[in-house]
Image (spheres, rainbow, N blue to C red):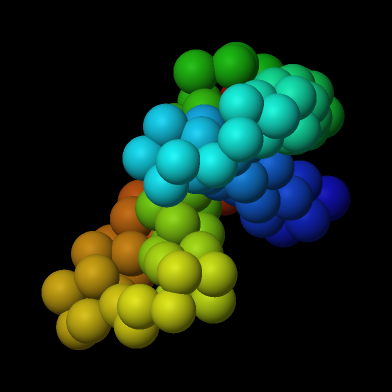
Length: 106
């Protein structure tokens, strides 16, 4: 379930933040705020569904997924291909997320 929740949460967070970016930096209508707020609320709710014994651990592991998802957004939505440094950094972050999330804890 975590492998589904984290990417969905990342998509919701990035879309919500992009709505504000579009309004403030791309001169879009302030009406972009409403879907942005809803998307950010969806993001927060999705993170609460992640099975974890501690919120901080769930958020820390999510950080790696967020970084990789942001680079996917860069490529797919903004049309700018990530370079080798972007991809290397994202890979390191995903390994870090796995190290945090996957060990069995007592």
